Amino acid sequence: MGETKVHIHEFQEMMRRIYFHRDCERGIAGTYEWLTEEVRELGEALNANEKADLEGEFADVAAWLASLANITGIDLEKATLRKYDKKCPKCGHMPCECTL
Ligand SMILES: [Zn+2]
Image 1 (cartoon, rainbow, N blue to C red):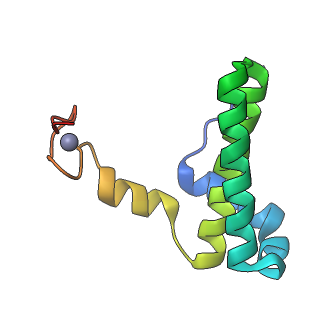
Image 2 (cartoon, helix red, strand yellow):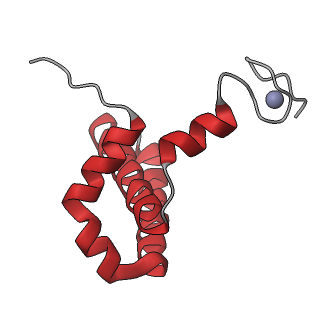
Image 3 (cartoon, rainbow, N blue to C red):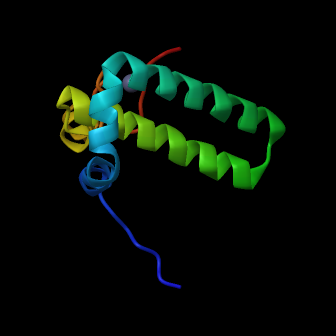
C-alpha cells in the first residue's frame, strides 16, 4: 500500500473539510479543552510505551491543533515555517546551539 504524503497545509485543509462545522459550533475555548485533553492522553501513551496507541495519540493532537488553527484563522504551515524555517528562532542555527 502506497503512503500518502501531505503538507501541513493540506492536512489542516482536510481537517477543515471534515470538522470545521463541528469546530465552529464548539468554539475556541471548547476546542482548546479537547486539545489539552488529547495532549494529556499522549502523555499517558508515552508512559505506557505502546507504539499503536502512541501513533493514534500523536494523530489526535495534530488533528485538534489543526481544528483550533482553523477556527482561529491560523495557517499552521505558514506559521510554523515562518518561525522555524531551517533554523532555531532563538539562536538562528540548525542544529540549535542554544545553551540550556
Ligand atoms: Zn537555538
